[in-house]
Length: 126
Image 1 (cartoon, rainbow, N blue to C red):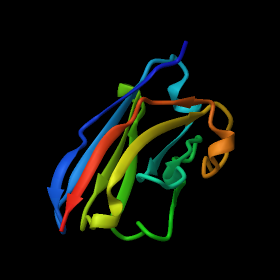
Image 2: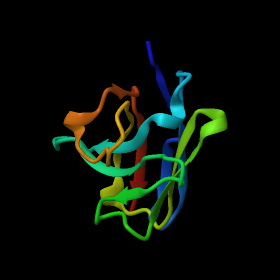
Image 3: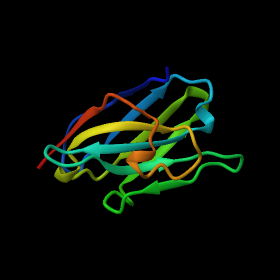
C-alpha cells in the first residue's frame, strides 16, 4: 500500500514563507505525477500545484492563485515532493494534501489522484 506522509505545516504571518514536504512509500516514485491540493473550511478541495517526471525532467503546473509565489519540486532519490510557499496570504489558509497519480499527466484534477496524504494544516494570519 502506497503511503504519503506530509510535514511542515504551521502558523505564519501574512507575507511569510513555509515549506511543506511529502514522503511517498513506493519503489516507483520517479514515475508518479505528484501534486498538492488544499481545502479551506467550508470549501471544496482545490488544485494548487503538480509536477510530473520524464527522461527530460519534470513539468510543473500551478493554480493561477499561487503562480509566482509557490514552487513545487521533487527529489526522486528521497521519494519526496516539496511545496515552497512564499508571500503567503490569509486566503492560502487550509489543509494541504499531498497527492500522487500513478499515470503520467498533469495531476491537476482531484478525480485523477490515486493516493492522498492525511493533510497538514497551514494557517496564515493577517
